[in-house]
Length: 124
Ligand SMILES: [Zn+2]
Image (cartoon, rainbow, N blue to C red; front, top):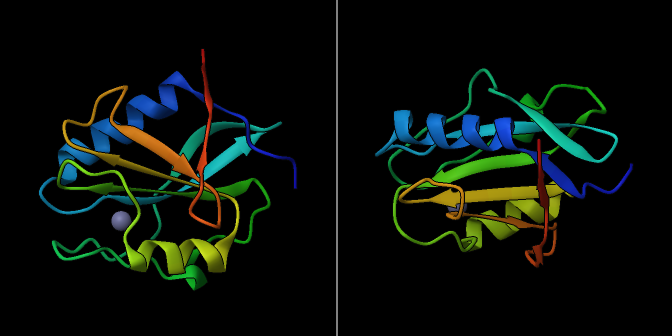
């Protein structure tokens, strides 16, 4: 699997628009990348969008090698992964984005499967 190093500005915009629309519930989706750049989101059927903490069922992830990670929103002001998030990340691998209020260009962070921050370049 090629390392993910960047995200398209349009994908970031989609993430924040979806997060705003889903607020105060959490928005969850899978991330698709091409050549190491995140290009779009895949909203999963059967994804739980609760107002408690969201749970993504890894069995729902499409069998698609362009899926390289996940995105979810936090309906608060922290984009730090919760214990449940860290557990989920460790089972999946890849890159995981968390965005939080106010859902703008600066309110997101990306993490690896160990819950460590990773830098993604924003590209056009
Ligand atoms: Zn979370």
